[in-house]
Amino acid sequence: MARRGATGLLGASIALGERTFPIVARRSDGATGRRGAATLDGTSLARVDRGDGLAAARGGIAVSSPRMTAIALEGVGKDYGSTTAVHSVDLVIPSGSLYFLLGPSGCGKTTLLRMIAGFIDPTRGRIRFGTRDVTGVPPNRRNAGMVFQSYALWPHLTVFENVAFGLDVRKVAKPQRQQRVMAALEQVQMQAYAQRRPNELSGGQQQRVALARALVIEPTVLLLDEPLSNLDAKLRLEMRSEIRRLCSTLRITTVYVTHDQKEALSMADEMAVLRDGRIVQRGPAQKLYRRPASRFVAEFLGETNFLEARVARTDGDVVTFATAAGELRSTAWEGAFGGRSDAPESGAPVLLSLRPEALRIRGDGAGISASGSPGRTGSAGSAREDAGAGSGRLNPASTLPSSLPGHVGGTTYLGEATQYAVELASGESLKVQESNARTLRSGPVRLDIDPDDVVALPR
Image (cartoon, rainbow, N blue to C red):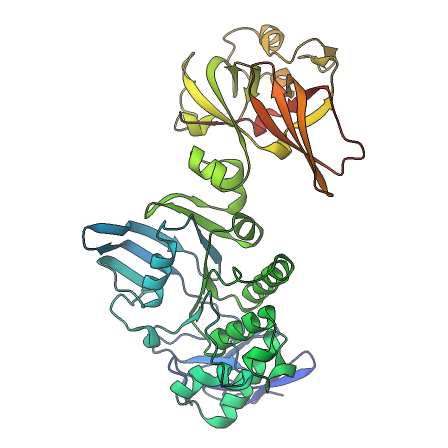
């Protein structure tokens, strides 16, 4: 039972599930104190930010915080002589989120992360953790946990000693150090390996130790620099789930750098895609995948097909595009025209992005008519006539799939999916992915695609 006093619950203990944790006050430098207030919210111990870094903790790992820390970059850039590695970047990373910086090698993502960590001084701009300006603050005073690509574990120290290193530097008392290290190891399911050395661990276990070392200092933000790049495919999948679980449980604002698109798409709350030192698009992972703003983002985030096209006509929110292979209807056209405020001009050139998994392959036969019954073509012409030219109303018939004829030119069986190369009548080839295919297709086929999956991009 917790003892209450004028300062809240300090000096007491709290039961969470089957375990009991002491309630201590700690400052951001790791020292404990008697001032401040700790409150109880349901079954979680809340951290109370007094402005001087004093907060409540349980078992060495902070539980939840009503005032989690956002990261703000204000015009942050980095020059090396006449070379600009990062142009002036403005970015707000929401508190408690798992935020990905994604891009090809040399795009500036790691430089940006190291400026957030304090390992590189920005040439210009400001970096804020919450309301605190940390631009000129050294790394050891930013209270940021860092996990490196190479793990950076001391080979001559045990797992326990590696995790405790940051607490030793902060001169945390031995009893509290012991408690916090074991709590951190428990978080990553490594408490049984506390006395082993790094060379006695697998790659995945070493990565878990590196995570525990970053978490044990109770960081304001957690920074991950391509942490899974040295692991094999199976371990990468396991660690994705583990990192996602930790971030969701601890609610620490986390910035994760990677060039692995599937890693980002499967884990991120939000992401920013970088190219040549600039952010080219940002937002939720699903939005960036389904509504890329450019050809670069569309093909960087996954496989896609591109077809050159021109606007044929507009029926309400549906635009019909003419390609060399046939007509395709789209309700995802605003990216090519800066929004939906005006109807696209007839004949305007665009680039259409068609994801392989969005194309549905079927045996050759009648296409889908505007009425939804079998017909000879996937053209939207009859649908437009039904709606009435120039009506400006959304034509329900025009939301039916478009259909293109083709011929299977190649097949790749992957087990859970089959990939086809389908040659169109125009001579262009489209990649098509079919999940759980029971038979392999060959010969003439038709490809159907919904208007929402025909994404128009600037050309």
